[in-house]
Length: 116
Image (cartoon, rainbow, N blue to C red):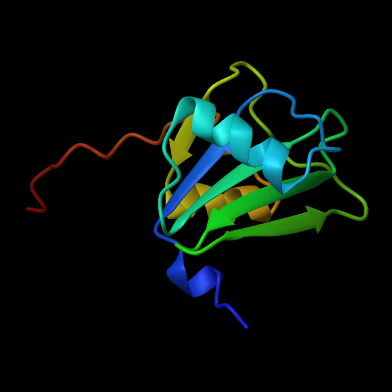
């Protein structure tokens, strides 16, 4: 068995809608038209319903297709672009937990004041 999650180093999402009927070859064609497949990179795709995502992982010898479907909620998927966007491991975790990768409010650091 391949340990996919242990080998992940980079995360990409394809913003906008993806036809979720596409399988490995169709998703690989989307990725290869925009970037070169990299070992240790996971490419994520989401359809219009936003209740399921597909992930495409290249392990160096072949593709691994990962699929996740939510039972009662929707992914907070960015819909404003049609490009591949690299996300951080933290943003990936937020996405998998159903949170948005775009913070709605930025927390500013407090001003440093002398204690005494």
